[in-house]
Structure formats: structure tokens, C-alpha cells
Length: 385
Image (cartoon, rainbow, N blue to C red):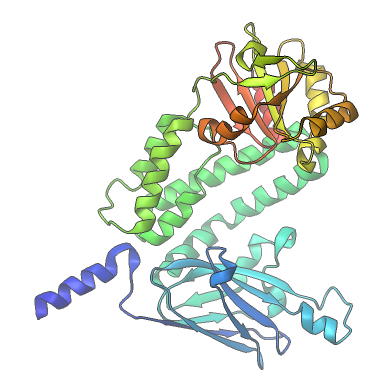
């Protein structure tokens, strides 16, 4: 009987499992309006969330969490303000607080609701100092990471805001530098931290877009968990990701595909490449607002680099008429093509393209050197080459 109990405890410990079969989260939020909605959302899955309401500055949420899980505590009093006719933005709160939840007795506390981080672009990582969550070993580890990286994450957010306003290459370089510093700090934290649930969550932030990494980078990520013997689903999923990501490392050969030219002829995609230099392939569609919003920036890059770098746009429109109409409206000064249905369907498997715009940068010998969705990223690549 004693041996069976030991086995149960060992299984419960795998990937951070807890013997308790449920959790209760008790929160104290001074200054919060009565009836403010409080929702605990695990891993961004709103459909799996728990809801409660603030009463006398307190709330309580009960549930079950099979594994220690990163959650967002979202507080929203907009409905109350609307019912009461309150139009003061200073009184309307959209708070978003991130921490780990696991089964057991948990306590959330803050000096004041006004001191908590707000949602969306008003989020300020420095306000993460203004709340604590006790009762979770995973959160204890994550709290250390939060506090250590507050300056880095705040600097990254400020650089991103500056780049959104200016769209300058100088500001984008600051974004890249801030991201590099945060990535290094995250890797170092994982190496020194033993909580697997937290390490796996942080490792998600180390994933990069296709064709922005090499196999050595994937091997480094694998090494972060080389000594982990657990067989839990999150660790298996991360290792599966590393296996699949190996198909999208820098240097993969661009495969041919059929595209339709404006004159109605069918041509090969590889025939459009610049054999004497690099080629930018822009995948877009007439219905894609961000795609068309990127065109002014692409025009500037074409003016600056067009003599050495070829630009090619490939529309993923399902209707030829939509492509021709948008092409006529935009009048881009480089070759335009419409992807065949076969090519459009294959892009996800070939190059992990699941969103547009997507820019591929192709070397003179037909290898993929870069893939990205932001024109700022592309400009940085062109400047480097």
C-alpha cells in the first residue's frame, strides 16, 4: 500500500501535477467597483474561463486545473459604468493580470485596483510589481521571472510603440535589440529554473517565425529540456514543434509553382527570381487590409533597393477579377502575379504561410533567407544585404 502511494505522488509530480483536485482563488482588490466582472482565462481560452464578481473589494473563483497553467485575470467594469451613466475614462477599468494557477489555496492581493496593469496597448509591465499571488509553486518561479525582466519587457513595448508611430528602420532596430536582450534573459532563466510548467510557457516565447532561425537555434531550444525525463503532454508538444520547425530553417530551397501573369499566361514562380541577386516575394490579397497598407513602405524599399533586389508580388485572391481590380488600383511598379489554386493551397505546408502579408527573401541560388509579416523586418534584412 505504501509503495502504491509513492507511485501516485510521483505521477502527480510529473510536469508539476498537484495532489489537490481543485483550486480556490481569493482576491482582494481595494477600490474596485462592486459587481466588477472578474474572469480567469487559462492560456487565452475564453471558452474555458471562470467568472466571478467583486463584492466589497473581494472576489472568489473556484475550479480545477490539472496542470499548473498560465492564466490571465481580466477585470472589467465597463458594463457597470455604462449602466450608471459614467463616462469618465479614468473610472472605466480594463485590467489584465497574468500569473500561474494550480490546484490548492491561492491568494491574490494588490494595494489598489488603480495600481494594476491595464489591457491592450495601455499595458505597463512595471505595474506587475503591484500585485502578488501566493499558494502556487509555479507562480513563485514565474514571479521571479517577471520581476527580473520588467525593465527588458517595458523597453521592448516602448520600442514597439515608437516603431508603430514612426515606421522608421532606426526604431525597428531598437525593437530587435530589445527582443534579443529579452530572449537571452529568458534562456538564462530557463537554464536556472526547475519548474517545468513555467519553463515550457517561457519557451513558447522563444519560438521564431519560419526561416528566421537555423537548426543550431532549434538544437539550443531542445537543450534547455535535455535533462527533462517527464512525459507530460506540454513537453511532448514542444518537442514535436522542434521536429516540425526543422522543415522551415533558413536555407530551404524555394519550390516552383504556377502563377498567372497579367497578360493571362501561366508562368513558373522560379522563373521570376533574380539570378544575379536577391528577390523579395510579397504574398498578399485584395481583401487583406494590412497587405495593402504595407504597399507605401514597399514602394520606398523598391525605390531604394530595386536596382539590386527584384520585387515580385503574388496575390492569393480566389477570384481573378478581384486581383485585377486591386492591381489596377495599386499600380505597383514591379511584376504582379496571381497564385494558382494549387500553389495557394500548398503554401502552408511548403513555407508555413498561414497569414498575410508574408514576405520571402530569396538568395541568388534560390534559397529562403528570411520570412516575415512586417515590412520593417523586411527593410532590416535588405539593409543588411
